[in-house]
Image 1 (tube, rainbow, N blue to C red):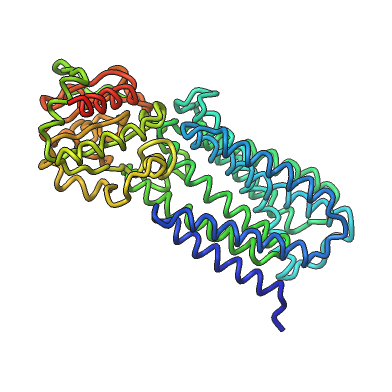
Image 2 (image 1 turned 90 degrees about the vertical axis):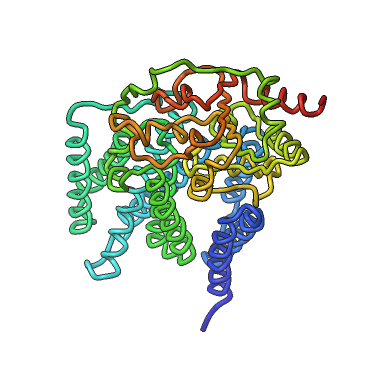
Length: 468
């Protein structure tokens, strides 16, 4: 007979699925987030009731501490720090799964131990080891990603001789420990080896993340998010909790799908990401980037071009996030529309430093969803656009991806802003982007550099329109 607990679990799973579906569109994302939160509330409440908790004191303390940390983070963490914060949260999810696996093994090992190696016991032992393995890799890898994104450590790829061989040896060691653990779970000496497996998992997480450059972190965050889901799924098997298995599977599967999409957007192989080949190549200087002289405009001069434009496309990047210029961009877009121009916002899949970074910023500024266009939709018509305004983007508009076979990003799909009739690039300087690759776009005949802080430049343009 189906119990109320099982009904609550099924309702929670349905809410997770519908919430995840609604998160795919900015117009329904807020409601999707609320539905998912309601599902998690149902799952937690049902679990607490099902397990017949005798004492709730420590649970209440944990809830209060988590609520305070979450509330402060939501209010105080700026959007520029959100990619690092997402990486940090991924890591805490991995750590939670690791601790669940460790705790369950410790309780069973010091208690009645494990029974004969039947199917149920095998699944439990394998899930326990996977929880600590994937959880450990997720935790330490996410902390490295967080440190790179927050520039607490050098964001460039960190390589050393024999790196892949060391990673392979550590992975072989972990697999060997897993086999011993499954075959002899009650052997006293294996508890020490189990702890060694935790240490190796943490080391492996560091080693597979340090070779990846900071500019490639959107893909890494997506992959680590998938890892955290798989670790939660394994923890669900350890605890015998159906809803945790479902939730972990959803996060793991959606993370892998998103990772695959983003790899395609950067012309990379998912295998390279999984085996730390992503972003590890050293940058080269594009020969074409050194030809010609960059031409600059003041915001006042740029205004006269925009005032006559019939179509304008904004291409935002991380520089917009740093300057917190999204509201000023929205205001300029509205003024251009009132002036008779068609306005769009072209979003590259890996613009910014986390999946959907630019979408979140523009949604915060209430940019209509209908004005957001993807790379594949804008490129076929970009030669008809009067003005492309590149705001703090670099690698995602770098023509070297098409023109220079020696460039590390050669073959990467980009937004072809250099094919527009005119291109304004708003940057503080001529410095290369986060990936450290020179950009020949700056020297194109139809490109004009507008130097300065993105928010200050856009605000100056807004003022020119208002005063005209």
